[in-house]
Length: 363
Image (cartoon, rainbow, N blue to C red; front, side, top):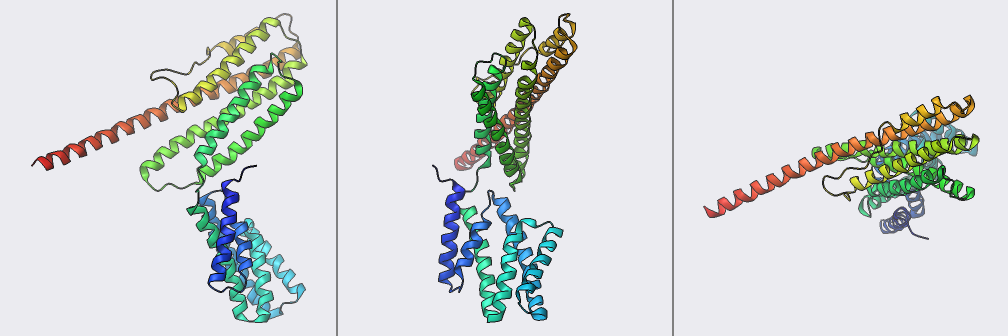
């Protein structure tokens, strides 16, 4: 069992909220700690948006709670009706994620107003302290590094996909093992989608860094789509290939092509990680191989219509996967070339600055 950064930061945020609450003399530091637990987010951007939404919803909730208290009191029925109104209002404003803490604010204020304004303000201060503590901890302690997580998850997904593709036709894995690996791949791709969205949400302020990040995002998006197409190919082979009997020669050619696609995908990761030698290119399969496999199916006299239809589903999935890999290859080349050009420009600027300093020192 490992303690992740978010788990650790939640504990730190709770401790910080309790400590500051006791330091400034809050009557309810426990409320600040509870708020901090629900406010920790997986990214800095989401933490900031959480603060904005929470402030907005808490102000609305507090205003409604105070108004309802003055008009109707704080009976259980009144509190329940006010909660219903606040929920509907939050949904209308599209800040549904803040409903939980907003309802806490409503209940706390309406219950505390019977004890006077100081108690109500104390409870509201506890809520604000919890939100602020969670944001500070999320920014200051181990800020999320979604780019590294994305690449690690993508690498694992590619390795799983490669293993499944290479054994899908040859049928070397046990059926239960194949199913487990397929479920792992689907789970990795889902997590990969989450990491991509978290990385895409982060804000970059420098113009040059923004441009570079946009190029990386385009490549990452294509990595994700390529893995999804590969997973669809695994499903197509699993559902269609074993439902019919095809020619042995076609089986060998299909197995060889799946092997080539797996190797191509793996080498694209090597290219992106800088593991290929300078001038080396990822070994793409022959561009007309899928066409040849399709023509073999269509021209075979021994293949009935049902078998032909099922095998065509497989070749179309092969084409979709290969097309995405080739597109990913082109995007990687453009991105890496652009980064290389920018690196050369920076080196020239650095050398020019050093020469200017040397001339000034000589004079």
